[in-house]
Image (cartoon, rainbow, N blue to C red; front, side, top):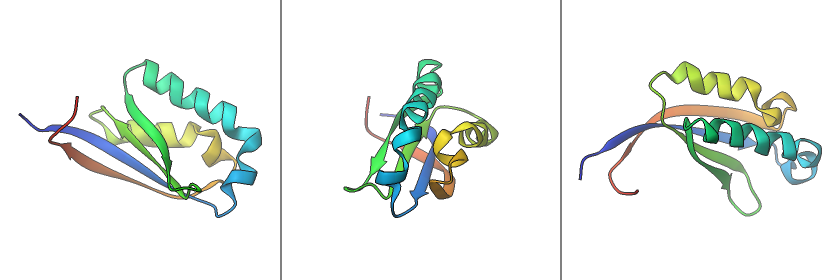
Length: 95
């Protein structure tokens, strides 16, 4: 099996994200769906229970595309994301 290179985006959320995300959640999920439908965002979801962050895997060449995603994310615009990181992710198993 050959390795596949993706770009991973991780978010760190504010401690009270569950309460504060409510008015922004539908728009956040629509933003995810838009990028997923275009094929640029492969998977996305919250980390932790209760959530403390998010993980996203992108199939894009240019990390600037991910910064575009971040800039347009309603959670970021609402101040729910306190930090984010973009890193190469070498996938060696999976679909």
